[in-house]
Image 1 (cartoon, rainbow, N blue to C red):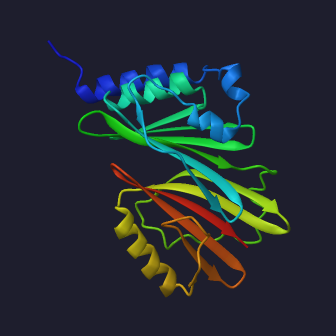
Image 2: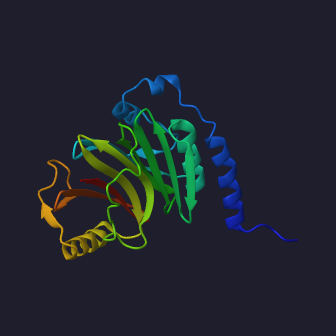
Image 3: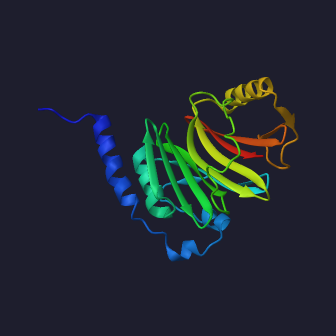
Length: 233
């Protein structure tokens, strides 16, 4: 008798709980909390949480909190989605699940990777207030210095104080060290000059090319690196 493969079973499970995710509604009590308090208050059975971090990307606040789960990848992602009420979209890529959602001027993102045992990942909240001005840039900025295998998970463009702002998040299947070396070499070859980075944001780097300013912040994960990018011109 023919039996469905493990991959098909996983895909079927992912489709079922992704459909359920779209109708999740955040609890009123959680919605009333501030964003850092809401992230700090996240509670999922079996999850072990790491200390919460706050960074400032050229005036844009980002809050990040890592976790480990003893559950398999899809089960851990489903538990996080159901107990947080933060996400409206789900993407399943090989041994990674990406959850995302937009609530009250904040973009919420979770990346969950398969681990041995269980799963590991993080939840982040990125401030994106202001009218989305996608398509209004005088020219399309080039991010060709990124590795070709970088996968964009989030893209937001706005106009602030007469400047165009691009905020993006990428998943890159490289270690932080390898990615940093690649970016450093490519940016220098394209004429970018390194500048002192934001105070208190360890691991970030800041670059300038003419009127353009770039801040990148890599975050190591189990299956690669998440890269936060803030570009202004």
